[in-house]
Length: 402
Image 1 (cartoon, helix red, strand yellow):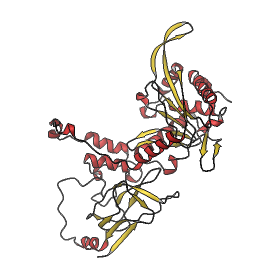
Image 2 (spheres, helix red, strand yellow):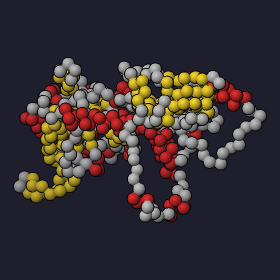
Image 3 (cartoon, helix red, strand yellow):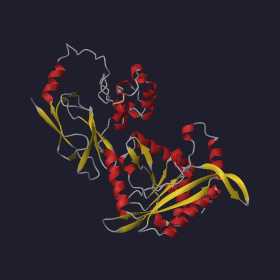
Image 4 (cartoon, helix red, strand yellow):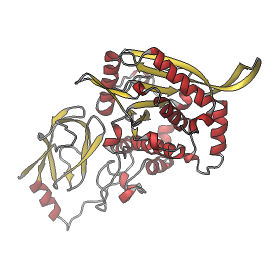
């Protein structure tokens, strides 16, 4: 027997250790060179690791959630066993009646390329990713590719018809907090513990803005390309930050220094299957409405299907967030450290208001914001939100030259 020890490689950006996210192999499995063996979690993303050799898995470093140091053994392979198996070509194994486990190598030798999130969904749904056509670069399976297959999958009649048993309703399920979810929990706890949040909510009449948005969307045929409220909020925020630069800042805790940024690197809080991520639109201050909208879509979709680059998940200077149709009346967004401010939109609804002494129906929405009260005074925070509100209520002012 000849053992090959696959050690955790340097994942870049100063990483000295990483968390096991998910294994796609088990002890005893035969693995071909370049097969994806699992994912490792950094503080920014899940990184797929491929086997450097062909062999049989003898040992794994641990379970999902365990921490492995860079350079430490990750997987131990028996390479002699794999070589012997490869010579047995005269007696091929029979084709299995059941689909191959999700996330494994395609039957024809094609490596399945997709995100860890899609691999997990495929595993849970019992879908063989080798059967899913990929339309992404190099045949990569995108979220829409998987959804197209998953939505067309038939549900077994017995499973669909069987009601839950009385015992099943009393069962409990333990879910280990690992990966992105663990990092989110740690960051949120640190933000709440270290930052004295100052929350300010302002009611905004977005009737004219919605009229403009609907007019512009009426000229766009593709529904996926239509404008949401976020790019308008982004442009208004960028304009307001020129007067309130103390809100476009990050706190360097190690040096005890506030860094005010000339450029606006806009974080976009995005809900994903792995939890909340904040992809970044860099140099948002240099973008037009359409460009900003397209970039918000791109980074948000990339965060959801894990196709986004790692460097696009860090470096924001201020964040916007939206719960969409679940926006509610008011929220208290948690600041994305090391930033000092975050602004969120709540649900827009039609309701009666008094305008010019008359009761009329207007489209109303609340802006909910939080600021680090150590570095942003309440007056300045409120004044900036008032400035944004005024621009959203009179959207033509968003586009006036300076």
